[in-house]
Image (cartoon, rainbow over all chains, first blue to last red; front, side, top):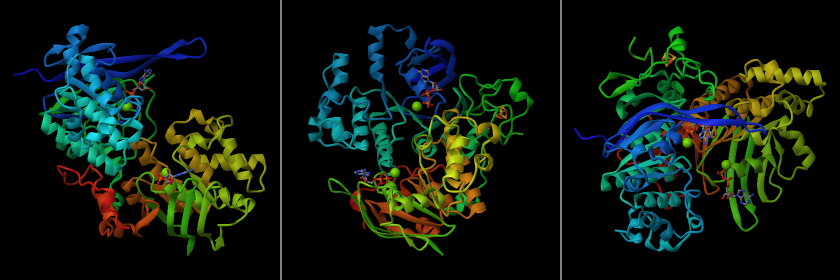
Length: 323
Length: 273
Ligand SMILES: Nc1ncnc2c1ncn2[C@@H]1O[C@H](COP(=O)(O)OP(=O)(O)O)[C@@H](O)[C@H]1O
Ligand SMILES: Nc1ncnc2c1ncn2[C@@H]1O[C@H](COP(=O)(O)OP(=O)(O)O)[C@@H](O)[C@H]1O
Ligand code: SF4
Ligand SMILES: [Mg+2]
Ligand SMILES: [Mg+2]
């Protein structure tokens, strides 16, 4: 069997937290606390969770914008942490990223043409596709090449970000909240575009969002994160139809449905309290302070991800539907 | 009984920007009116115009509150109405809270600004309100400062302050937009409970069709400063007549129901009104 396109094992990232004038070390944020994910060629792994759960940190670890505290990332079986700069360059080509805020990720003093040819210059390559064609692929017009980022609407600017990510024909694009800042009608267009491009180029995506609807629309598999860990992974239909982790249930039941009768009739799980601080996560299960099913064992013993059905992994001592 | 009537409201900013263009609204006492639309459609400007908070814009048309004409009312009378009978909460509670005073003190002062009450009574009201909006240990938390609260708890504080004078109308402009989905669910639950208990009418402004579906009695869909559709919530969601409303409903990616391969999209050209 071929090695997966991307495989991350036990990724950990801690950030030092400093306080006061002396910048004294006050502790460490466990931003990512043992995350393993795999992505196969051509598929979309959705990564969902509330703000601060570590999604962007995972994205930056996967694309090696930052180094992990521990853990490994391999692309097609080659471990990135062992590659030096020269060997890293072709791998970088394969891994690209799209960001939430299209404006701040595009150089405001560069024209669209300069932005879209920069990846080639960096790689020491000549473009294999004219900028005009690339623009048309993402739904923009050839004459847009001469314009500057601020001349575009949010949705159009995100299309430029997508074009830049695709310029080098990567195999995997990590999309960090690419539609979160957009109005729903524009969001729908960008989701459709990402799907079309996936077909056309045989791309794989890691699609990060806090919007569970958007994640369902585009993903083939989904991983749910909470406080720096993955608490459940399953194929899309299993996750949205037969979620086993109490947090996944709570998340799904919290999404307001655009359907008055359904929305008013449904049974809602309203979680108590707020997210614990990642500076001092709870003992045992990270979700236990808000979990409606929590029992003594949950405080004593951290549940590990285990397979409960083919392709369905859950980190919970008492998963739903299995008592 | 109609509490708020807006007729032919038009708001022009310098430079020729018409943010609201001939808008009519009706809100019955104790009811929830959902005002929904994408960004820039004029929702926030509408709410500010209703409150008389747009000194630099040209506002025409008529706003009536409880039979009284608000448009053209002098600043002092407007200020007396605001807070007392009309209250407002926003997406970002920090912009309305003073960082240097404990939240309990701020609620007490808001109360005392409109009621003949001493410090001690103000404090009692603040603690009672914090308790009512679900802040644990309200007596202790009343002495905490805004930065010591999480985003969700801060929005509860804002709601406590807005409701301490038992207003007839609460204008809530994207009250849950900045919150995570599980915290949003808590705040929506709170608004639902408060509404049943207090009888305060709510003008609920949001871009989220789901939020409107769960709370509103009547809905107005806005586009380009105009109402393109209005009606009872079930009418608007199950039998929308306007193309823009139909598109807006169809392009929301959902967590339930059938999964389309591609999402329907809508372009500005499809807007009818
Ligand atoms: N550079 C950094 N320094 C310190 N803390 C950080 C840094 N980056 C992220 N964090 C913290 O790590 C946690 C995870 O952040 P992030 O990955 O951005 O979450 P998400 O993208 O899911 O919102 C948060 O508590 C955040 O405050
Ligand atoms: N102070 C202002 N000066 C000029 N234009 C404004 C001002 N405030 C809002 N606008 C414009 O009015 C329109 C409606 O804005 P707004 O009511 O904030 O939209 P919404 O709340 O629906 O997102 C937008 O085009 C916006 O740019
Ligand atoms: S392990 Fe316990 S606390 Fe954690 S999710 Fe499962 S039931 Fe809840
Ligand atoms: Mg993030
Ligand atoms: Mg607004």
